[in-house]
Length: 156
Image (tube, rainbow, N blue to C red; front, top):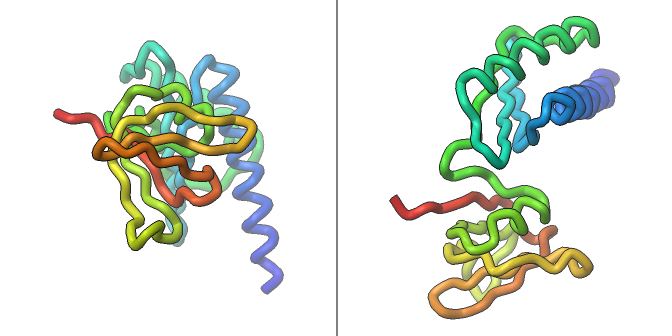
């Protein structure tokens, strides 16, 4: 029972350390994933308006390795990559940046019996913290807090 809060604070610190390091290098932290168990793996997803190259991933990986060593972050394996074509959307600025793009949104709870919506992002309302999506000719507005998962859904 006593280890729970310790693990929580470690996760918060790792996210803060990772965000600061990635942003210092001129990239955006899209997502940070950690797999538990005896061999802890950290996955870091980065992006930038110009895209991400293998060299970008290597630069971030090398810097994070040094920072994690200094900060005492316990992990065995580190992976740094781009978020891919189906980039996750988590924050309002993510949705705003990709206005006009196709996206899939999964809600935490169904609306009219439906949880998944795929369509074109129409924008955000920062004051209301909502996201607009046009799906099958119908405009939908979702509160950011009601969105469980969202990602780009490019047509290939």
